[in-house]
Length: 162
Length: 286
Image 1 (spheres, rainbow over the protein chains, first blue to last red):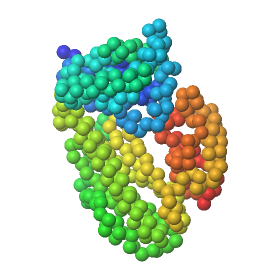
Image 2: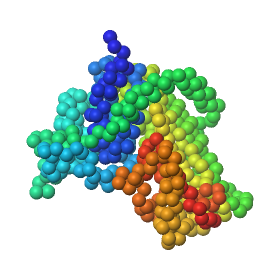
Image 3: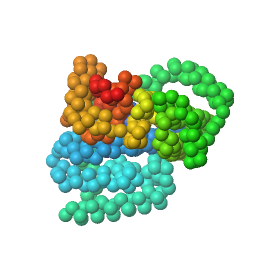
């Protein structure tokens, strides 16, 4: 059997773009997102001995990554609101993206951290409810209710706009 | 929900910087290299632990009467002083707390001392409480995801302070709080107190109405100067780098030469690896 540490290293190497997108969605800043990814990897490896089971590598790492992102946001609130306006400059445009897509993305980003986290993990990362519960350290019912609340809030935001 | 699927196309289109792969590889290597230092770290931890043994433990009391008592100390000289009123050391499985809480004295304005010292105590209590809660949460997360209690490394929480400038008119000092796991997160609280009025001075108070022009010019110049070293890569304006200070409430302290030192937090105007950025405004204000 492989060492848990090797599994983690493979995981972060193979999923680095995913990890970066999560960190970026919270921090809205390239340099900060890179820092968050880097710090999360260092923290995870440092505490790897506390992770015994390979199957938890993904949820465990996501939890560290999200905590790290939230800590960053807390310290840089002002900068982030400003940078949120700039998302248009930070994506690779393709035919599927119009201002409507951008708006929905922005609405999701404007939700409170708890709602935003479950929506991003569920719909952007296709995580199962069970996995999201592990990442956010809550139970499945809480995740479901946050999803529901988040969707309701999004609907409200979209209506308000049209 | 279809709309969210649309947003996912934006999410998936977020540009990936070229450096990402390098940074990930470096982070993985960095941690492997660190192994070599482990022994040193343990030795350090042991010596810290023995300090705990010899240091008396003092709770920080939020008590107005306590604050009142210290302010009754006789006035000895001309110059205000900043001293450690409380030293607080605590160690358990979750964290190692090491807090040095400052207070001011000898200002000749006891009302002011009372108020400021009480405020500092309240603030530091809150800061400590939050940091301890975060440590507890982090530990819980480790355990819940299959970690073992004995493998968890306690988080280091440290509160300390440094004194910038002291005179009979002004005290300037900075309280620092850091939480260390793999790397340190530091937060700072700036105090530049006018002893006569009790006001926490802002840049307009110390540099006058032209404060923005003075500060901006100096910083632009110093950034240009420092950027000659290729290791210093300040964010450009487009990258949300320095574009002039926002207002007079920008963080600063007064150094022992009586000059204003402007401070930007890590990430604020430069990438994280460059750390915090300080700029001395070369104008004698005291």
